[in-house]
Amino acid sequence: MSIDWVAFGVDLHLELDPASGRRAGLERALREAIRAGRLAPYTRLPSTRSLALELDLARGTVSAAYDQLIAEGYLSARTGSGTVVADLAECRAHAVQPTTEVSAPRYDLRPGSPDVSTFPTAAWLRATRRALAVAPVAAYDYGDPRGRVELRTALADYLGRARGVRAIPDQIVITSGYVQALALLAGVLDGAVLAMEDPGLSFHRDVVRHARAGVVALPVDERGARTDLLSTSGFTAARAVVVTPAHQYPTGVTLHPHRRHAATEWARSGDGLIIEDDYDGEFRYDRQPVGALQGMAPDHVAYVGTAAKTLGPALRLAWMVLPERLVEPVIHAKRHTDLHTEVIGQLALADLIASHAYDRHIRACRLRYRHRRDLLVSRLGRRFALHGIAAGLHAMVSLPATGPGEQQILARAAARGLALGDLGRHWHTPGDHPPGLIIGYSTPNEGSYPAALETLARVLHSGPSG
Image 1 (cartoon, helix red, strand yellow):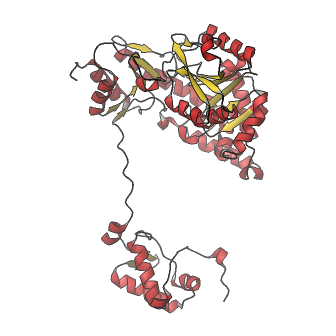
Image 2: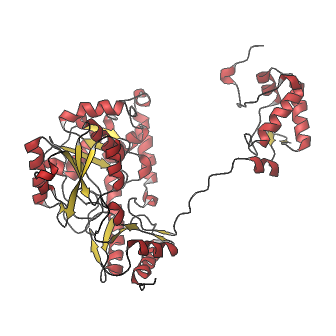
C-alpha cells in the first residue's frame, strides 16, 4: 500500500529496536520518549491506523501497545479525544527544567526602553490587515536588502516633514535595529577610526570595535559633543563621528547650533562622515522641534532612526538615510549580513505611517511621557540637578561630589527593589568623572510609576548610611 507522506497526520519520531520484537519495540520506544520528556504530558498521539501505516506495523500491534501503556499509566484514552500522554509525576521529574530567569526589579527606572504597554496593538493589527490585503506575492519571497519600497517611500515622506531629513526612497536602507545599522556603517568604513561621544553607550563602542573600526573619545559638555575639536590634532585619524544631536545619551543635552555647523564643516572639508543617531528625536516637551542634522549636509550625514522607542524594541526595525556614495557599499554589506530585514513588520509600519496612525501614537506617547517627566521634576528637582529634561525618555541626575557614590546608591536602591542607571559605565575610560545617575522614566507602567518615584526619592534622600 502506498502512503501519502505529504498529507500524513501528526508527526511522531520513534526509534524501534528490531531485536525487541514489533510490539515490545514500540512499547519501549514510547516509554523512553515519555520518560525522557520528549513526549510531554497531554501530547496527542497519532491514531492507531496512522501510526501503523507510518511504522509499517499491523494496526492490531499498535492497538495492543497503546492498551499496554494505558494500563501502565503512561497513556490516557478518552472517547472522542484520542490517545494522549498521561500527566505522570515521573514524566515531570525527567522533563527538561525551564531555565531560571533573573527576577525583574519591582521598580525599573533604568534608561533605554519605552513603556511597551503603550504599543498600539489595535492600530498595528489594522495596519497589518490592510497591508497584507494589498501586498504583492513577491513580498513573501526573498527581498531587496534595502527593505520594502512601501516602507522606504513612507519614511521618505515622514522624515522629511517630521525631522527635516532630505531623503528619497532609493537612499534609505531598512535594518534590524540601530545596532545593525551602526555595525554596517562601521564595517563599510573599512577599519577607519570613529569619534564617539564621551560619555556614551559603551555597547555601541563595542559594536564599532567588533566591526574592526577604531574608537576615539569625543568629549561632551553643556553644548553637546565637542565637534569643534574634530579639526584639531587629536582627531586627525578620525574619518567619521557618531553623534546624538537631538538628545544626547546619557547627558540629555541638545547639540548647540555652533557645534552642528562645526560638525558639517569638518565633514565637508575632509570628506568625513557624520553618523547621526536621532535618539529620542520625536519626544520633546518644552522646546521647538530640533531638525535632524542630516538636513544641513545630506551628502556627508548617514541618518539613523528607529522604531524601538516610538513603538517597541521587539519590532527590530530601524532605517538609514545614506549619502549616495554609501548606498551601494551598505547594500552589499547588508546582503551578506542577513540578506534582508523581516518584511511583514515593514509592511505594517508603512501603513501605520501612511495612515498617520504613527503620528497619533507618538503624540499620545509625548503627552504621557511629559506627564511622567513633570512628576520626576516635581519630586526631585528642588534638591537635585536634573539634566536633559526638555526632551527624551530619561534624565541625568548630578550627584554631589561628597556623599554616597553611584555604586552605593545603586546598592541602596536594589535593596528596595529599584533599578537605576549609573553614569560611571558610560565613560570611555575609568577615572575621576563627575558622578551621576541616569533615570529612565518611560519603562514603568502607569500604575507603578508613582511608587517607583517615591522609592527613588527615599533612596536619594536617605542619610549616608542608607
